[in-house]
Image (cartoon, rainbow, N blue to C red; front, side):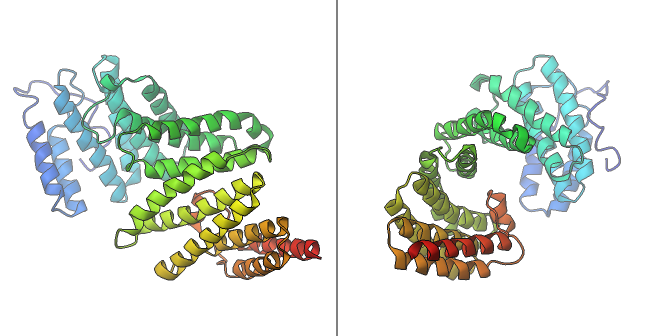
Length: 391
């Protein structure tokens, strides 16, 4: 199977006396073994099981329960190949898995479209990480989004822990990311911002109605964060406080849940960044609305939170602290508190110098610039403006 793992799904064999025997039992055996085996041994066991049932997924007479079990095994196998550093084999396998499911869709089998979405999402994830053709990645997520928009709860299937609404929110989130990248050309980007904002608003609406809010908290935070940036990009008159406030509350919940866990992993560090960034975005929203005193209060709370994170988790927050210092300086200047404005402007300059030379990847993934040179220049410019306007 190592040499033909990408093509075993295509040709059904004939002449078997009991073609469906053992699918359920082997699936249960794999799930139990996976709990105790090392990943590489679990992958070998899964290969043996799929080899044993390699012709059955293409059989349109196969019971739906067995189809679901085999699709679950296919998902695990593609994921296992990727984790075993065999991404090309995983991509090739998933393409052929999709080809077989399409035949079941053409036969109008119940739940076949839902299973196709699952396979397309796996292909999107794999090509997003390893693929060389961005068009294939876009086609996978676009087709998944097109299909899921027309499905009803009766068309969904029970094997997944995600509801149809949850899956719709997640797929629409990834579709919006790809659409955002496709609108990179500044000459045409303004024309597509409205539809992009509508897509992210739809993600937030789906999440709000979800029955499993805890599972979608990361999706909600990312969507709200992106909405804040897009509304800023739309123009200086766009008020995005409603999104910033929702983001602030979502990151508060996310922060409480993540910091209660040990040990601290990459996801927790991402949450810490997101929490501090929510203070920055809410301050920007209040400044845009000329709510200077509210912005000062939020910025001070944000500085306390970022300082606590630095002290407790020993994780640098210099970029966020620098930004909050600049915002505090500007707001104090607007309210004619010149001494406080000059003090925070000096602190922001000092914090900018503490930013690492290498940009923070986690922060940049949230959409914020983490380049040291950018913030050194902005802090210096803010200090000059503060000095000039304080006299």
